[in-house]
Length: 367
Image (cartoon, rainbow, N blue to C red):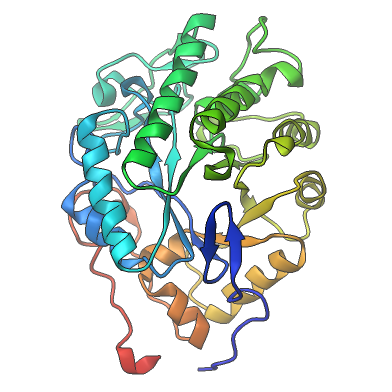
């Protein structure tokens, strides 16, 4: 083991109204442990409290309305019970010294009536090109309902209400999810957005919905409490981008003047010219989520990659799977201790503590 900390990773940072003790952030990761109605469970309280040593926890995707639900046992933030349940989580994390943002995610066409009870919605009536998990097993995706102009406006209003609910639940802020093939990303991508109105066609139209949602949420709860997540060129959930190099600079430029808390970029490569271009455009905190293999267990490799991203202009580093398997990841990386092996497969997305809250923590003496 080594006790030499990386040069920047463990230095303090400022994010909106928060003073962070270091630059390691827990990325949002869906785990399907909420109650059937979307209320955070007792397990979720324990899970997040275990990981409170992260400089910031971005809690997993919570839906702003019922039709936005993707899979079973996904948390929501659109009912009073959701607020109460999430407040138990944020209070437990705060008691352990941590801070939290909540990711707001509308699934769009990534949904199914067997999960939400409703036909999913999307920018255009184009079905997800792959089956979707439901309580009855994998089922073919259904053709989504194309959002009308009025429904786009009401969906924006739902994001605003969800953001207010998140603040009421004790979160320090929210992350608007415009990545990974969900609703806002579906508006950005040409293969999922075939509209001919003000929300489709040219790049300026396709970015409109994300920009409007972010502006409305920022106006409601304060820009310093709002982050945005993007995933350039990520093909997940059937997304095909043909103009990534032009699309994201336009989107980031449109968001740059709003004084937001951060821009969160997924699956980054520290040598990617697009990352450097977005860094030049974005005036605020840049949160990078390095594209590391989920099985990486070498603390030196993880910290070295984090340092490369910080040297390339990132301000904070978001890690996902490493935090899943290592509740005490921050301490392990500080001292160079080996990491737990991530138990993948069905344990990632089923109920119960196994593969969720039962990962070992280093004895105190190891520090």
